[in-house]
Amino acid sequence: MELLKQRIQEQGKVLDGHVLKVDRFLNHQIDPNLMKEMGQAFADKFKEAGITKVVTIESSGIAPAVMAGLILDVPVIFARKKQSLTLKEDLLTTEITSYTKQETKEVYLSKKFLSKEDRVLIIDDFLAKGEAALGLCRLVEQSGAKVAGIGIVIEKAFQNGRKKLDEKGYHVYSLARIASLENNAVTFVDEAAC
Ligand code: 5GP
Image (tube, rainbow, N blue to C red; front, top):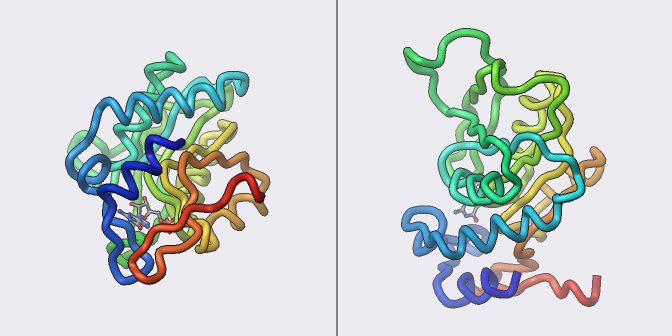
């Protein structure tokens, strides 16, 4: 998605050669118009996949997921990182190791929102080692629902998450694929050469 790549080049900051900070439009301040374009791109890609629900994880996956859900006209569910008084019973749970926080935590999703009839589009902001996306797949599959696709805003193609998802046979679509963050510069995958 050219618009997204342009924003990454203009406003993204590379940290330690492997982390991209995009707090100007995705991870802190959110650009709703850009989110709308992203939602449209995901919806266009998966419009024939019979999607009945969109599933993401709090917090940065929520904005693009809501936009995709709006256009696909399906509910959006986000996995929660903390239990609470209102989130106690009949839960699907799995452990996810956070790439940026370097800690493993249980995540939760209420059983009542998914059933075996559902075809789910999973959406997340970044794909690095695949922990978050695979964790969301486990939650969805625990419910008996099918993962019909995975939409990623920014894929760091130099890390192994994509390979893990491909090996498991998931259909992955990323809006921007980064080949390298070396020397604090963002280089995108040359899609024409793939
Ligand atoms: P994974 O689980 O695939 O290893 O990493 C994806 C998750 O870690 C995303 O949900 C995202 O929150 C976070 N993440 C991974 N890499 C980056 C990055 O370069 N920048 C930011 N902002 N978040 C990242």
